[in-house]
Structures are given as C-alpha cells and as structure tokens.
Image 1 (tube, each protein chain N blue to C red):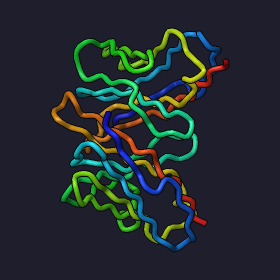
Image 2: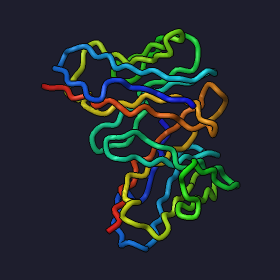
Image 3: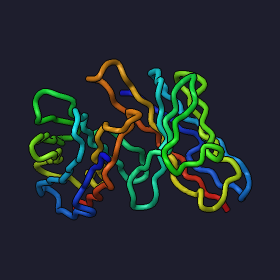
Image 4: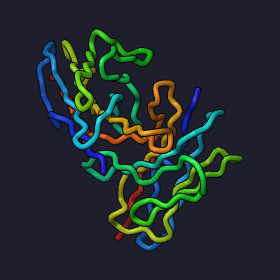
Length: 118
Length: 113
C-alpha cells in the first residue's frame, strides 16, 4: 500500500524557535498533500492544503505566516511552525492524496509529529 | 457546511461481541466515504472506503461498512471483535472544497480480553 512518512516524529523546542516538519510520499507521487492538526480526544482538523508548485490554501483561522508550507516536489511537503509558542503544541499529521481518477481518490496518512513547545 | 457525526464516543466490548459504529454525514453531493483506524501509538490507517457500486463494502481485518444513502449513514461493522481491535475509529467523507477529508470526532473502541 501507499506509504507516507513524517519527520521528525517528536520534537521539543523552546518558545520563539521555528520547527520544520517533513512529509514524504514514499511510493507514489502526490500533487496534493494536506496538513491536519489533532487535539487530544478530538478529531483531525484541516489546517491547509498543499499543492505542488503553487501556494498553499489555508483554512479559516490558520495563520499562513505562522505555518509556512512548501510543496517543493511531488513527494515532499514541509510545514514550518515559525516562532512557536506553547499553544502551538499539538499533534500534526500530514496526508498525501493518491489520485488517479475519481474512483481512486484516497488519502494516506503519515505517522504524525508531536510538537511540544516549552 | 459538510459534517460527519460519530455518535459513540467510547465503546467497550468483550471479545467475540459484535460491533457496529455509527457514522452519519451531511453533504448534498456525491460522496466518497472512508473509515480509518488509529491503533495506540500508530498512525491512521485506511480500513475501507466507498466510492460507488455495491453499498456494502468490505475492508481489512474482517470489517465492513454499509452505505445507506437515504439515511446519510456509513456504519462500520464487525461480527466478532478481538482484543487487537482496540483502537480509535474515524469516519470521514471526501467532501471538502480542497478535496480534503472531513472527519468525525472518532470512536474509541476498547475490547476486553
């Protein structure tokens, strides 16, 4: 099956620093990747849609200058949390969209990144 | 706006019991429906999906789900659960404007050995 990796799996940083999270589709190309945030005991909330070669589309309430997304290739998207603060501590999950026609439109998820900002 | 409802927050069953987890969605257009499972400490894995055709879809590990269009439902079932099915289950619909998934809040399943 399709595999998506995320790196790092866990990161602890000081307030004010920036953290970069990588999301890679290992065995397929993904023109679209999604970044979600999962709060404890809650569902996944979409933060932004990352399209290869174009600007990301952010959901309402998500600061684009704080959560920088770069989709540089068909297998890599990065999320950079700039000037992180404790309230940014969360579980960040990416997914890569495998699309080869409407009957195969499926997202495969990375293992997530636990960010803790001290 | 599209939404997905999972009515059961936490379900506790004994091994060999039958399982049905409810999922309802609100979306007026054509939908693709998914169930994902998240085992403790692991990432989301696709359990099964419905795009079209037979409304009864079979997934991995003995799970199945039935799409009932008139009820806007896509309930997940398994005839006999095992301890290893302990996990969180998420229902999702591919109805976002960006092609993104809209998730329900998840149902935690605990299976007692």
